[in-house]
Length: 227
Image 1 (cartoon, rainbow, N blue to C red):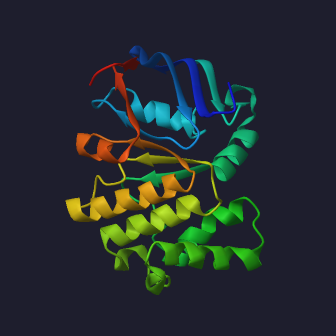
Image 2 (cartoon, rainbow, N blue to C red):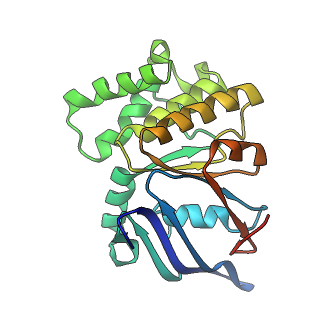
């Protein structure tokens, strides 16, 4: 892997065992994503997108093959080291927002910083600054249930940026939003990308590829040159 790649996937296969036998979710997947790219990952339901995202996000391990993030081979890391990489290098944005319902917007953004040991004096200051960038600092003390879908997703983006990760994994981030609000979210992601973040966007919507630099297709667990 050269210095230009943020993500490199080498011959990755993922097999799940079940009572009915085994299911091959990924088969010999290889791909590279350069630092600073904004890449769309597309494919039908069951194509392997979520499996690949879980592996890239250090939430799962491949059955075979290697995954490198910033030249670090994840297959050589312990579970504890994977958790550290996940906390420091990766920001997650989800379709369902995944905010903690009992915490207000500010505390949701603060939470990832607690896990990686950011000093208390710095946490709230950074969280407020991120909410300000997202245009929702006035909603900092509101619970997720008191926010619109677009506001919740902006809190989710702020949370993803809280530990200044190098890579953002966005899984259908506009899936639960109306088209106008979805465009706003994509504009935020474009802004973050222009600041140097590498973004991998999982989407079913081909219209969103106008925001990205290129598209990778998955079909039946393999990289394909077409949908």
